[in-house]
Image (cartoon, rainbow, N blue to C red; front, side, top):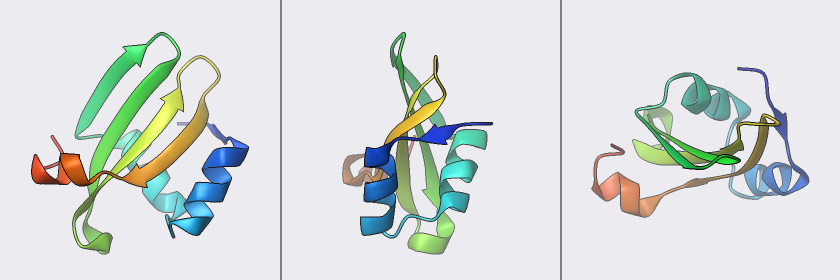
Length: 81
């Protein structure tokens, strides 16, 4: 998927040590995808390389801009599904 990163996403990816390859992986291989509104989608997938933590990526599907990304503790408890 072709996408851009918002300034906020760039900042949090750097501060949270999230790899761009993980962002690519989640967007291309989500184990869960939630449509929140016409301009917000949440993608989830387990990142095995990071202690099997669940990475959440928030995307604007209209502009294909990644808004933010973070490891979601609540989804990890649910098995990232």
